Length: 112
Image 1 (cartoon, one colour):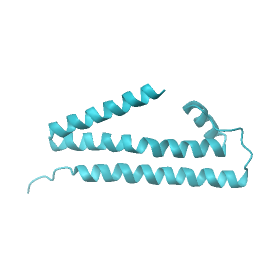
Image 2 (tube, helix red, strand yellow):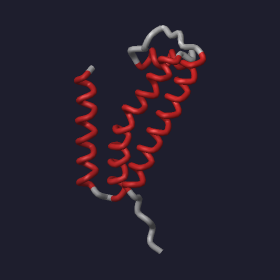
Image 3 (cartoon, rainbow, N blue to C red):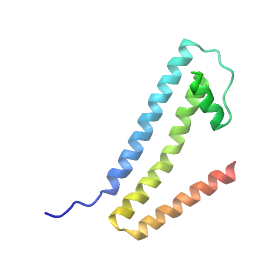
Image 4 (spheres, rainbow, N blue to C red):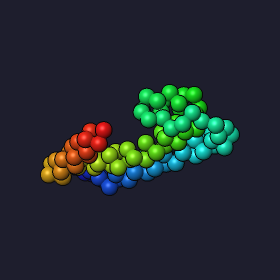
């Protein structure tokens, strides 16, 4: 019996599904908080401010966290593909995925 090789598509599917589901649940929770108490101190503008707001059950911060998770999901997909290709032994596509990840990180840093 030969050992099964990891399937890159399965890694990518799990990363995308988990990211979208987690984002949806956080956005749903934030919306429920907003309906219960719509008064908010405004939208947080940094990750520490988002985390502080979420700890204080601030609806705007919770919704911001859900959107942040949704924005990070494609990056997680690239990381999952890179890991999957590396586990398959496909160096070419693992390096291409690493290059795409580097471009995403550089673009995010330049946008700051």
